[in-house]
Length: 121
Image (cartoon, rainbow, N blue to C red; front, side, top):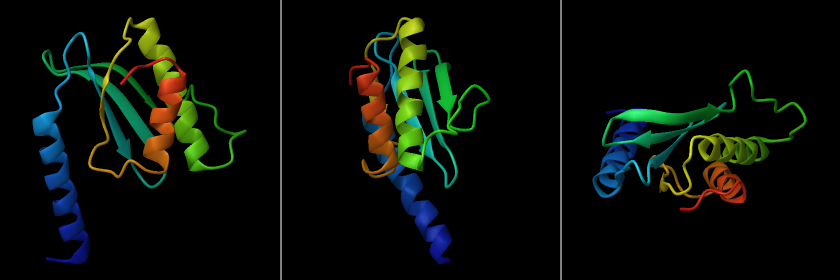
């Protein structure tokens, strides 16, 4: 097993461990974060129906991050925009799913932006 494969295996184990404890309902859906090297993605998911209610990423066409300096600032803006979309969809409270990533850097910036946007978790 190569180093990359073992890292991916460890991350998938972390994701499964988190998912056994976190479950999104209609009243309090799950806010899932995926972080790639270039973009950050966030979905608000109702696990009882298996549907994505709101989605946003830093690579979307309606996202304009030209005036922002780094990836953390982009993540914070994505968090605030997803909070606005969630408010429009009638979602006030969510359960945060960091997706196996550390709560640090871009993941923390996204959650801070979502909190400032009015989401509670």
